[in-house]
Length: 67
Image (cartoon, one colour):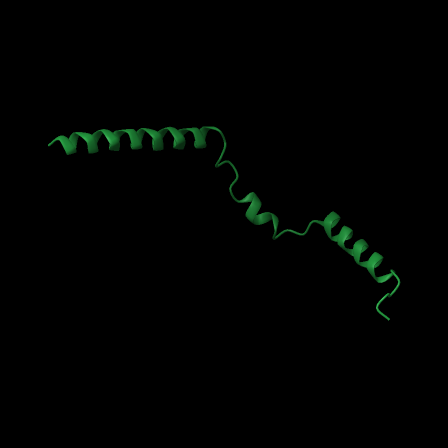
């Protein structure tokens, strides 16, 4: 019977920790916008694509040193 008391106490402590961290995560904004990072890769950012295009032009205009 002593083991049931120990397991019961451990269970209550674990439930208290889980409840505290869930409360903290919800009210500190951890779940405010969970789709923004996933959706950001789907939408084209014109400033970034322009930067990549400019980098490619610089590489093409460099002298060919492999010959």
